[in-house]
Length: 252
Ligand SMILES: C[S@@+](CC[C@H](N)C(=O)[O-])C[C@H]1O[C@@H](n2cnc3c(N)ncnc32)[C@H](O)[C@@H]1O
Image 1 (tube, rainbow, N blue to C red):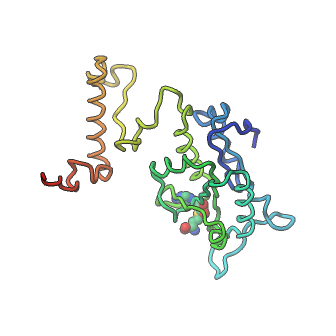
Image 2: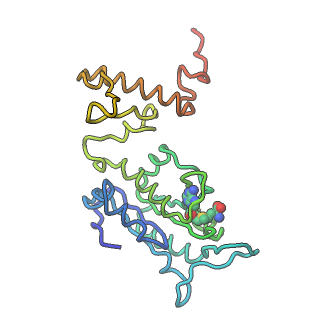
Image 3: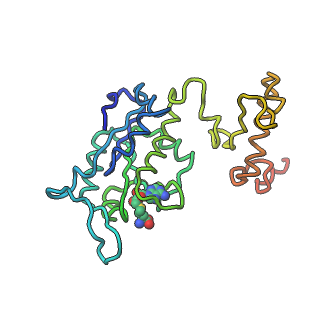
């Protein structure tokens, strides 16, 4: 990988992977790349291969009990993650990206973003020898109920979602609280429009053109609520006014 600005960073993550180069586009481009160049974020790598065994730095072997595929051996994984942890202060969090982990939510992203550092372990092949997980005790995080070939794409999802919560990463004018699942109400976002005014005969809601900020805010909130109700009613569960909300306490 190329050199990235040294650590005067708000969040520092170390990724343990066999394929650090897969991360290059994320680290060099767009919002994330700009934040790395400005020193707001730092991501570095421990190449699992370095901890492989023998002249060929072997990191995988056939599974006990037979069956297809290879398994990442415990010792190289343990030593690589320990080397990654040594780069971080106490209290850093270790995440093993795994389809068997807790499914990532914005609430989990907010929580991870408070960590003094992140170590992200990317599996490959059939996964990691279970004993490495017993020794390292990482948090296991899945990005959804499907199976990827490796943890790298999932690690990039975590890195990106955490990064955009850091002040300054999105630019001063944007707050992640305004996005879907934002802190506070946790609703889906309202619809957005930009120029031109007419797209194939479809206009822009009048209220957005009037310059009445109160009316615009009210319209956006109503839209966000309606969308959430239609697309993700589960997000409204338990809120006052929703069908399953607890009944109001009787007057004393
Ligand atoms: C082919 S998968 C192994 C799947 C494993 N045999 C299973 O069925 O649970 C290889 C690696 O990809 C990563 N991976 C695959 N799907 C993922 C998901 N949905 N979320 C996070 N990581 C995933 C994990 O790091 C995993 O060790």
